Image (cartoon, rainbow, N blue to C red; front, top):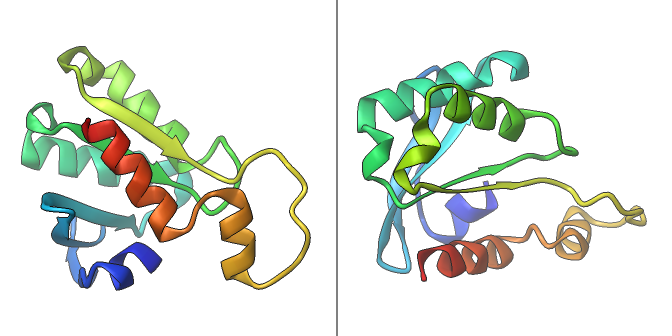
Length: 130
């Protein structure tokens, strides 16, 4: 939500078993998707996007989890590997909370310590595009 807000991307369209929006970050077209399925079925949402947009033509795919490793990003990676979607040179990055203790604080400060603020994620995107 923070990335969508910072880059004025309206994530309010319903399709792909989720809510999504399209826009630009630093001149690159992006899609932000929030699956509305149960977490263990979130790969279905991503599969619909991959099939609809022919993901082989895209440069990068980033998943972001609010929790620890083993959730949404893992389901996406399983789908991509099961369907040979990584054989195309697609760069994939799964982001989640690091395995460290983070003191209770404001969400902004905790995301900052975790390296998951909007500007951190945009930096990761820019590094992947290089």
